[in-house]
Length: 322
Length: 96
Image 1 (cartoon, one colour):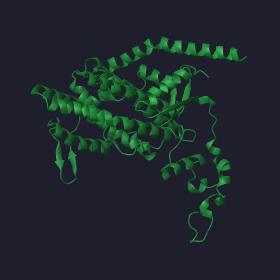
Image 2 (cartoon, each protein chain N blue to C red):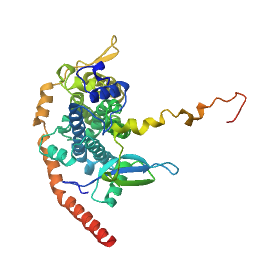
Image 3 (cartoon, chains in turn cyan, red):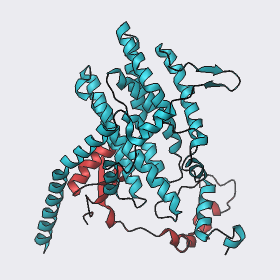
Image 4 (cartoon, rainbow over the protein chains, first blue to last red):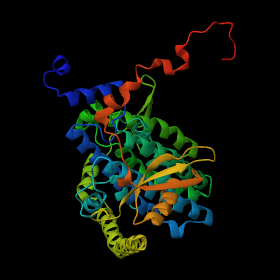
């Protein structure tokens, strides 16, 4: 037994787990894993799934009012993708022993969270552009490294999701481009949307590293591969030149190019606002969750009917066979 | 087989093209086989990723135990003679 040689405090299971992580191998559903690794993943994957499902609402809001049939078809596709992403992620969480029905109940009664970005309103068509460009852009910065996260089913779900997200971002940017090249009024719509979404997008990466208590363990377990601030910097560095091409101004007076670091320096978001939204006091928190609960309750009879139908046919097949 | 509070779980396998094996794509929940196939179509082939779908109730899959890895797979490890590279043959021998 090599356990005592490695460390007197680690069990044989822990040693094996650490070895797999050190090798860069994936942890798969039936492997032994520390309870906190499992809990952290269920929380993170569950929140991620919920974000996709709640994230359908700000854009679903514009499907009936999209300015052309083409834009309407595109928006429907994108919202359908988001439902799909939620489902991939619920499946991944279920491989850890989480129960999908329980997770949805916890979303509906506010016991589980989702990304605070989806608690902001979408009053204007240009918001569809800004969401695709900035919100999906920030999501991509977060998600691309997650394709290499240490838990196999989560990593595989992320590969699928990232392939589809790139369409989302490009369609949003194209909306911004069209508006920016349009009339002065249309360009102003695009600028206003950028003003509304810039700071919430910056805050999507979570609190500053020195304020993020869960990060250290997640990094050690290779659930996260980069810190919040590293990912935020990457996003800013990518987004600034994109704004320049649109001819729009990022609403940050402290934004400047730093020759020495080779990165943009950016200002501090309003963290008080961030924590308020997380506490449930953002502009749309109540509306988002109550819509979700209503949809779930109104769908109950459909789920009941489907189960009754399946049961009836399974019984009929059995009696036929007998 | 019905999940205590919702639909049962199904595993989805997709053949991406003729001539290629079905490959595990993921899982989903559905009330019955027909709904599982339709949901699999919507969930895993929105961009023409497949020409054929299998769905299997997850509880029908029998899996090996990761802890049995040694007893199951180690017997193959000392049989290097099963690989063509085990055999030393003269250099002038071509095409073999």
